[in-house]
Image (cartoon, rainbow, N blue to C red):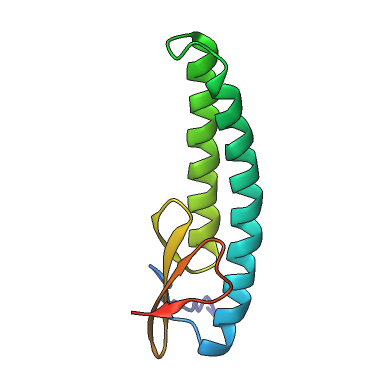
Length: 109
């Protein structure tokens, strides 16, 4: 009866990253944010030209909210914590950093 099973603890939450990985994460954050920002800006410009109470405006607003939600999910997957629109916190072994789009660096807080 060799039915031995290994139990592994699942990592939950956001794990601190190394300072070496910080540059890679910031590079990814910039790429993700650039794409999302362009899409959201396009939708916002469309929103300016429709009646704010119309169904079309509601549809555009729903698309904007969806884009923001997708940005948030992507940011979480790469190890950062979203704090606001295109702004997040990154925990490293040496401390916590604050990053805002379009910065190429993060500030130690």
